[in-house]
Structure formats: C-alpha cells, structure tokens
Image 1: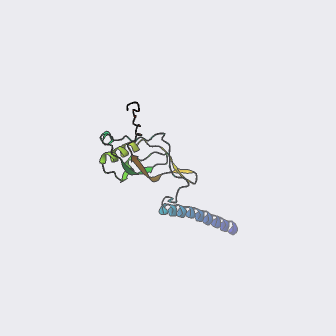
Image 2: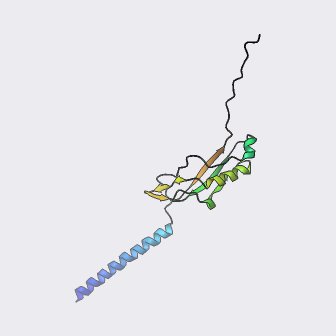
Image 3: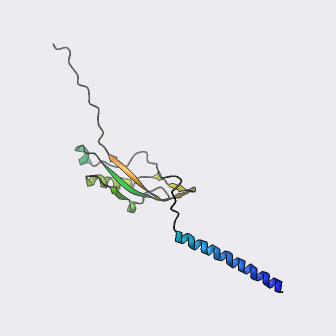
Length: 145
C-alpha cells in the first residue's frame, strides 16, 4: 500500500509539475510578446498596375513629386487603412491624398516567418512623374533655295 501511495504521489507531482511548466511557458511567451524576429520573406506587391490617380491640376501644370507611405500589411496581404500614414509627404497635399486613397487597393503576398503568413509594416515610395514625350524632329525643307 505504501508503494502504491508513493507511486501515486510521485505521479501526481510529475503531472502537476508538467502542467505548471506548461503554464510557466505560456506565461513567459505572453510576457515576451509576439515574435519580432525579421520575417523569412517580405511582402511582395501583386498588383498588375498601380492604383494611384495623378491629381489632374498638378498633371496639367507638369508638376512631379514623391510620397512615401508607411503601410501595415496584414497576414492576408491587404494594407490596414487606419494604420497607413504618410511617412514623407509631397510638397502638394493632393499627392499625399492620392497616395493614401490608392493604397487601399494595393494587394501583397504577405510576409512569411517560419512558413506562416505574418503582418509586417513596410515603407512604400510612390513617384508621381509626368511622362516625357520625345521631341518630334523638325522637318527641314531642302527644296527651297
């Protein structure tokens, strides 16, 4: 009877110890917070074309500028609109507004850490450039003398 009681006590102590270790591990993981190690792969843009509309008035004035957005891309590859901010703004606020509006339509392949899709924040530069057209050659009339 003493041996079985002793065995039961040891077994209960082991079970309680293992349970306590699991609880300690969970608590330590919670206190440590989320895994902040760099991802194995960064978000990759999937859009075929960029969804940014050039502000018409600035286009007609041939004004170029750049905007850099800070985008938080979720684990599904979509930017989180309420966390998207202008990191470096343009001289004209219309470019900033166009960048923020267009960013909602961006889609990414999400970042991955250890094979699992994870949210990740990126800086996304946008350049608004008026296309330059080649200058047409001037025709020279060689028949007149």
